[in-house]
Length: 453
Image (cartoon, rainbow, N blue to C red):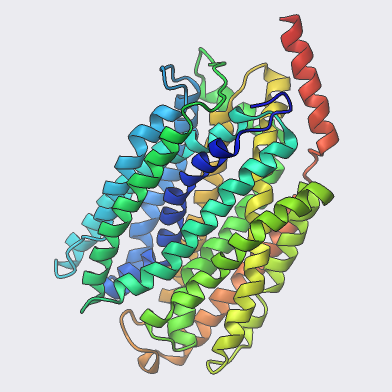
């Protein structure tokens, strides 16, 4: 790292590769997990929703604890990298096992095995992801370089998302049965996660790090520090509504494509992947835009685009599949902004807490941040599972055999629910107050305090 806080490209690229494992987990669990449970495992939607909710909630609650643990870890590998070494293999093995639940087992056993395997994989992703994400605030103190670093990470997230969104339907649709196809997907994703996770571990061996380790742990103090960080809390609330919207839309998309638009599962790949492809291309462009207009205005623009692109799905006809692709292209542009900018602003809130407390609690901040994302996406997906049950959706049945209420209901779940949530995120973000000028003033206070010490 040079005197301006700029990092070598090799370090940024290597660290970003680690995001591929997280992206695979997020995309597969959001886009296909409920589909896997209802269509391959033939589990009723409401039961499947609860089975997937419990592990996700426990995982979300564990994020702040994992952050506090990594803040206080002392090892020759630093506070964070140790957990990349441990977490990557655990994540690959446990998440791969989720797709090996026997489809011919009794329903109770199927549900129990799914819960156990999914709970283990959620614990593994917490061990890996929270310390990994916290490294962003440690590797550079620069306001703009954090945008660049997050840009690398978000590009990798998009690449991983595209690979999974496009590749998963091809893989699970390539076998004689969906259950067999998902087993092949599980084996493939296991290797992918282990390789990419360990890549980040080795690539960041020379990365800058801060060893200011808090000595005493107080859950009350950790929670208080997060709650009293107004900049973080307002960003957290906006990000929470955003992730509720993403969770609902991402979970419903495969049903919208196969049931409303009447596309075969193996033909769903372009619809699942096009938004990610566009977002991957748009991310570097949004990084440049962010340097010109700032992170806050960039986030506003993304929220507006994402909300607007929810509307057309209320009216599109099954014969207009190319139009749906076009809508998903524009939505991908907005999605790139709504992922880049809040994730680039979250590291800046660490300095807000340090000015007040004198401590650097990146782990606590990013634990709460991971909790926000997971709780939001989990809530969005759970809403979908309940809604599918309420509209009398019939698992495993073709569109022609579904009741009309199910087809119409899927359309509203996919479009109207996310639209309301995007608008809520937009309103919540109006309260965010951490500008670049204020951030630089906070850094100056921190330098003066350290100089006196």
